[in-house]
Image (cartoon, rainbow, N blue to C red):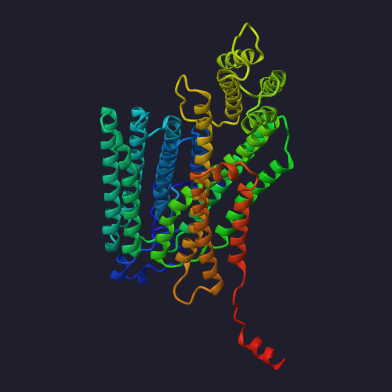
Length: 563
């Protein structure tokens, strides 16, 4: 049965109530308190259009992750920066929706505009790079104008709420204050667009993040100062948990893509170690899910604490996105390591023998080893090869085999350099096939420089994986502590779980220090990287759910003494 949708609708309760035959207008009251304490209509759960908006967020996140590989510190900063833009935009829309959104033509048009904002950000995502070396001025200007449009749409939405609630004196100042912050933010975003159009200020993009943090903090602070516009009675907690679930779902999507990529490119199949690595990645996602949702307090736990809890989800969600990305990257990296040991084994054995004994095997043994590896890689149709790569590899092989009149002496420094060059070119094909691209390699770089570039990518993944895992666990502890309603409301088990999350999270973050030594490469390329995180998360689960020091009821204690 279809129902008509009004052009615009009041967010207030009493103005939405339809008169019934039993109503008695003659007993209406004109108490002035009605003009001091308005009641806004709040949805008890997330609406379909809000979930639809969340899908735009996850689609944006997915497309940006595929377009931008985190292969350097600069790329990592840009990745976090774009996630900040997405998250703060999503959060500002959410803060309005949970308090004042209604179903009307006006609100549907506003949501359509917000969908357009997300699409515009998705269009800008592939070209987004806020580094000073590769600044895309047109893209930065487009993003700034998109943010301006988003804030103006929110400004108009708050304006409609202010119109309907104007007669309630207590709502005027807080709503006008929120509108002022949005208006100032929109003007600042417009001003930044001119800075990008003039191509003069490289660091102007930093203002995006400062403005976003300040406008969100102002919105939350206003809600805390004036309870009439607070989040009490709203489904804000549910909205935050929905986004957490979406990010975990994105992690599952990334894991399935990694497994599919491995299946397509690898000709060695899934070994027990590879299956165990995939299983560990799945367990990490599942344990994170349990640790978060087992500690979520869906009931109202205080206005101020709820606002702090909301704002703390920003670093938590950033760390969670990086943890999901790092987990999936390590799954691929582990398979690359296994692939190299299988396909490059003969060559690695020769290099190891030369390094340990300084003696060269027979040239035929050397040539046969390279021939086996080249055949396995060049015949793999899933690896994309350029003509330059093929020519470089074949020219190097001719030198190693002594063909085409080459005069380089076997075992000479020039011969060893050619061996390394062919090996690195082959490794480069494998890494590229698994979507591991290093930062831009300068033309004419030798084999050792290319090798260092690729393993520099691994070291970066190793660091942000453990740091993000530590921040996620620390966030569990902090978020749980914030939800405790006061002294005496948390059991001993609750506090032990909080302390365990904080300490284990700190220990995980400190593991990133291994990157300063060779231990990161040795441990990171082993089979124990993901199992270690699974073990720590399992310990955290046990400590969060073990009933430490449960106090028996009086009746049971009396029975125990009688016995």
